[in-house]
Image 1 (cartoon, helix red, strand yellow):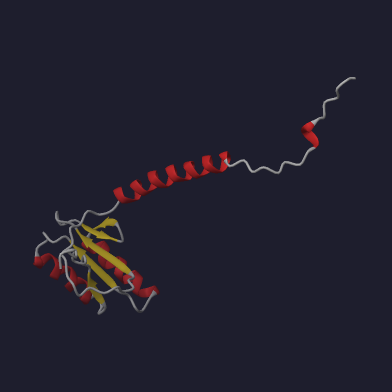
Image 2: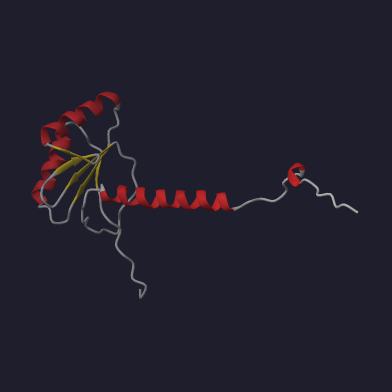
Length: 140
């Protein structure tokens, strides 16, 4: 009696192969890890002072002053004249401009007051000072 072999190519595939799913997930994880370190590396290094009474606010412009005295507007290095121009341009498109000033805690008080004065001279009455929330001890 001769045996006949059945051709299995016509059967419905009812199994789920999870290997491609795992491969795609691992690739996405690697991409996320690489881009996350790139994003963190581009931040402006500031050691903000701590205060317990900080609030979340909606901002239009973010001004940062590094410990070296460098001035940044929304993450891009700028100068005081360019800062004034940018604030004036923002006022043309938005009447309710809000500015947050973030200064390293080693920046002199005079430099921070000067930037506040620049902002107020341009008619911005809504501004805030950026701070870090204090670290809570587990012993308290």
